[in-house]
Length: 237
Image (tube, rainbow, N blue to C red; front, side, top):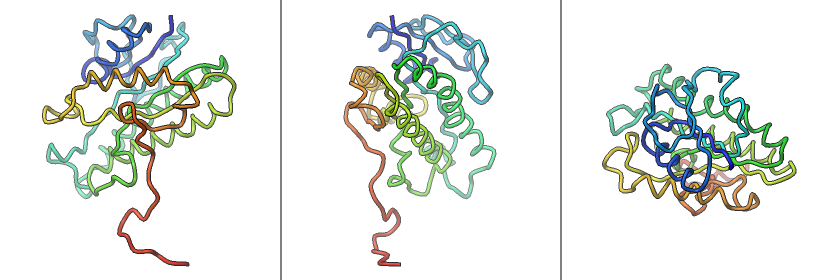
């Protein structure tokens, strides 16, 4: 039975991902801050603070076939009255990167080399369309830039996977605006179908998923070419 490690599993998209993975036949491992996540789809769970170095014994006896970096924070959310760049505190910027980027990097650095060594595996970063340069609107700099950096990490891993032997894929996934604690009740989409779509993408051949950025089952793409501010041709330097 293949195993999947998911972070941030106590609620929202993470809880639905565990359910979808379980239904697809995975042994589901969870990691997060909650002492007891109350998630019946989990086969095993360990407390892990992604702002800190990973414990050496974090699922040490497991061959993790799929890593889903789902845990994230959105501290500079304009919907909650705090999104302007010039109101952002450096502490909140740092905390956002600790979870959204460094937490993801810690997981990738732990599990990607093992996947390369055995020639199989999937790494998925739950990202956002807000992590594309073309969508930057002057607000939510901490969240947007952390997701942009995480996307860059995924692309870097994907290049290593493409150069290695076997069935290896790393991709980013945007679930869309879904109704969770982060997305708020105003969101138009339910998290369940978004979780189901991510699990379906795991079955794609690596050549069709590695190094890509999906929204639902369609490819969102990383970015368009500039200019990203204004539309005047700068001409020849």
